[in-house]
Length: 223
Ligand SMILES: O=C(CO)[C@H](O)[C@H](O)COP(=O)(O)O
Ligand SMILES: [Co+2]
Image (cartoon, rainbow, N blue to C red):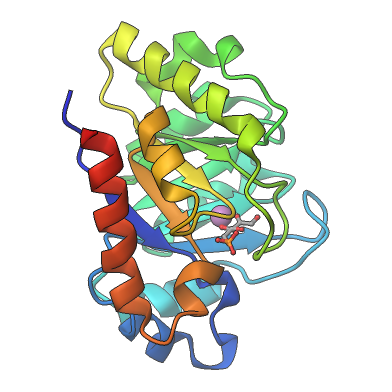
């Protein structure tokens, strides 16, 4: 099955004092990945809906919010209202994931659910139809610039097989340590949406890196 491959740079390693300008450096990105951290679900703190709303106003690229927060059932709707086109909550934090996914969709955004590296996908097989995307973390959430965890590759394959079995249109996103060295492994395993933070923002030309990542993923997906 041919998949539509998308690159979504994370601004976690961008210059937070100049976020509008930083996003303007990745004009060919499909989405801008915004990592929201609350210092409770993960030991790091970034920004909240006010900042995200300002960013949404500054770009025509849609925002892909990744909420690493303790109470997504309460706070996720605010990110739809802030203008995000996709909102991802962590299943380890959500109290009622089906209800939350339905609420995000009802408010007009794509609903997505994230799994940490050690969280299995199989218990959620029956709710894939409720989700527009599943995010598989390929590092422990909390910080950019970590090493890609190869141990997640079998889970990417199993998630793709479950999606094919159920015939759902759910996208499969990978996040953490994705680079020119690792993106092919992810695409071969079945991922179709690729978050890359440090790989993009440590490049001299971030938009050229987006193109290079896209080309590598495409060649691996069709191999
Ligand atoms: O969710 C994240 C961390 O929790 C980030 O999206 C991710 O780490 C991106 O940065 P990098 O590509 O440098 O790993
Ligand atoms: Co992320």
